Structure formats: C-alpha cells, structure tokens
Image (cartoon, rainbow, N blue to C red):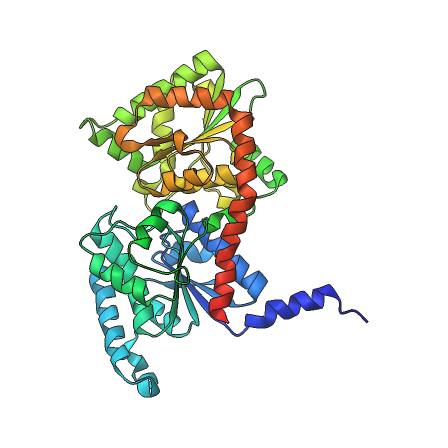
Length: 427
C-alpha cells in the first residue's frame, strides 16, 4: 500500500524538530522590509523544516506583538558599550577548552548570548547593514552578534544580503567573512565586491532577497483595509503608488543646504502629473517607526499637505503588515519607491517601478530584472527627470510588467536556494 503524502510531508517537516535557529541582524518590525525578511525565513524554517525559530531584536517590546508566533529575545547591539562588554566575555569564554566551556557559561549574561548558545544555527538578516554606508559604528553594531556567535562556536549564515563597502572596519569584516559558514548575497554588485576577498563558490553564492518569498495578503483583507482607511481607487485615472524615505529627503536637501526642498519639489511634481496626466497618487509607507523621526507617514503627510490637488491623492495612515502592503501595491499602475523593500513588493507582484536609490542595493536588485535604466540615484536626482520617467514608464507599463513577471519566477526560485542552504547547514 502507498504511503499517504501527508505522512511523508510530516516526516520531512519533523526532520529538524530538535533544531534551534536564531535570526539576528534586523532592526524592527516597524521597518516592513525587515519584517518581510524575518517572516519569510522564520515561516519557511518552521513550516517546512520543523525547527524552532527565535528572533533577536533591539526593540522586543514592539516585536513580540508582531512576531507573536515566535520567541523574541533582546539584542543589546545598539548599546555599543554594553554589547562590547558582552562580546569580550564571549571571547574569554571561547578561550577555554570545549570540554569545560559549559562550566563558564555564567560569562554569557545577555539574552541574545544565551539564545546563541542554545542555537544550532545563527542566520544574519542584516539586509544592507553590513556596510559603512551608514557609518562604521553601525557596521560594528551589526558585527557584534555575528562575532559573539563565532566566539561561541556556532554556525553562522549571512543570508541574502547587500554587503560592503568597508574602510575602518575592513579588518573585522575580513575576519567575520573567513569564519562564518556561508554567505549569500542578493545582487551582483555585492557578489562582485565579495569576490575580491577570494571566496570560492562553496562559501559565497549569489541568490536573491528572501522577501520575494513572502506571499501577499488576500484581496478580501486588502479591500477591508482600504474601506477602513476610506480609500476608493478611481477607475478613470492612472494609479501612482509612492513610497518616500527620510533618508532620501535628507540627502536631497543636503545637496542644496535647503530644508524642505525635496518636499516642495516632489509635491509640485505630483500636482503636475495630476493636472496634465490624470494621475491619482497613493502614498504608502514602508517604515513606520520605531520612532517618530523614522516614520515615513510623517514625510508623506508633509508632501501631501503641500499639494494643491488633494482630491487626487491619498495618504494611507495605517500601520500595515508587509504582506498587506505587497497586495495593496498590486492595485497600482506604476510605483515610485525610495524604500528598497517597497520596490521588492512591487516587483513581486509585477508592478512597473521607478526606484530612487541611496545605496548600491537598489540598482543591484533592479539590474536583476533588467530595470537598471529606471533607477534615479539620490546624488543626481532631478525631480523633472523623475516626472519624465514616470510618464515614460506608464506608456511602456505592459511591456515592463511582462518583463518583471518573467523574471519573477527565476528570482523566487533563486531566493528559495537560501532555504535549501539553511537545511544543509542544519544537516
């Protein structure tokens, strides 16, 4: 008699039921890109491999509610002095012979350190934070839990990231890269950069961002959200989705030493599109905290307040989940994104996008879809040229959407390789 398939699936799922995995490196679930990466990996590990997943977070009071299906432990990495002391104690622990290390486990005091000791595999999902683009102190803060994991003798997987460049922290980066078990990067720019370190294909692989694996919410759920927000999308207008970022705003204003320049010029551009091209604008925020200064809804509202044609625009004010945002974006005709994971949400559902970039992660991922000509680097961003791009993309939207959808199957398949590598590492 044939064995029933469900039993085979259960057997496969239980293969790693005694394994513990710790996810480190993300910032907060209020950053929907971080949340998309965490959920994609955590759900795959739990549902397909059957392993226990913990999530390390600098903001556990926020994330414990959001990641309610998983245990969330506190990461001290943003408290550099305190975290550095814990790192030093982990180094001291590593000096003792393995046979007697357990007697000195009292040296590991932090919740994150204890979770590392209790894990079979550490997966770093820092995204684009293993770089000095945001300052060497930020790179070092993300190095701390990785180094602690290395000192405590655990397997470490740097999963689907954009990495580099480094200057002041290069010596630490080199050490980490030599000690971790595996590195995957999500675009060719990072892959070419990491190849300079001389890694073989067994250590370094180019895959794709794990957020491509996150399934969008149902149409019913999104219709409910739009009703609760009071948004009804007009059928006789071009629906333009917009995701802005405080990083882009600051960098744009710094070019002229004039605060508010980005908001004023962006609002004027949207007004022109509304008046001459029958556009309806929907602002959707991909970062909503954890502090007021990091909430993209505030910037969206400021731009909207400076628009003359408010009847043809809307700011979504809810704090929506990444899978919900992905489905909402699928309702747009085109999308302009200054947040990379908002762009990934659009790409995942075949919506033509124009990206405003502030690091190599965005052009790298756009290149994977053959869309590198639709990237506007913040260093050279011209609002009038951005408007021209929006109009040009709308004319080509069907061709570009088809191009994205064709690439999507390949990209998602490549992204799945990260899960296969996790299985190999657990084996």
